[in-house]
Image (cartoon, rainbow, N blue to C red; front, side):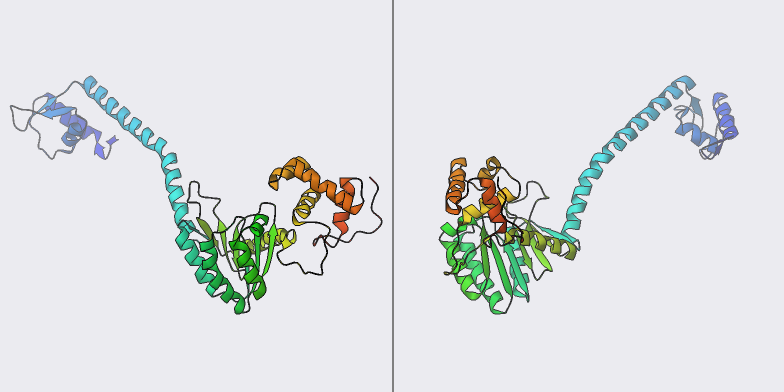
Length: 326
């Protein structure tokens, strides 16, 4: 019989010699195993001799040590899932920073620096969606960069919130860029922030890292994702109002009324639309009543049908036949 590489017969012979008070060499393999098991201890009075301990106490001690080892192992094993979770977060953060499809940028200075560098080499197109007002400082920083881009022959489309029309800095920037040839539209409903350059680079707001700074962002280079983002941009763009309206153009609807009608066509009821457009229910009702009077119609549904077919709706599809009676 073998015991961890040691012949059990060697262990038994050594144990008998200890019991019989016979001396044993220190390199005896059976003796070394007995010492490891704490079955014997060296004699304190007779060199080369050993004293046998009570096997029951030895077994109890070994079992208890084994139990402690198992408990320690179980404790270590139970900590593995949590440790793996923590390590995975840091591992993913590393992949985000160095991955081929997207990169997380936490510092706003680095975000703006990345935008400046990419925009400086743009050759085709710049699409920007700014859902909140930008400070005068940011607009002043962006003006020479954006102007240089348009002067190089790049097309530029910028989407702003409807509230930007009533500001001071934004209208000045929009007026200047419009004269240079940039296309600018405003939209009353919420839309996501994004910057798309040459359909090869994109900067989008952070929706992944919880607790990150407000101006952190993601730099995206995955072509399939960017094309999907362009589609989303165009969906909002088609629903927006041009900043520059030709003087000869006469419109029945105002920008806020067009936003209300787009929301109605999208299937939202009036109680949902008012908070989305940051207006009161009464204001919304007044706009719809005014439209009914202007158009000589009796119901809101008739107004919605008119909107679906009028050229004022830039995304309207051709509909045949007379308007229905509701």
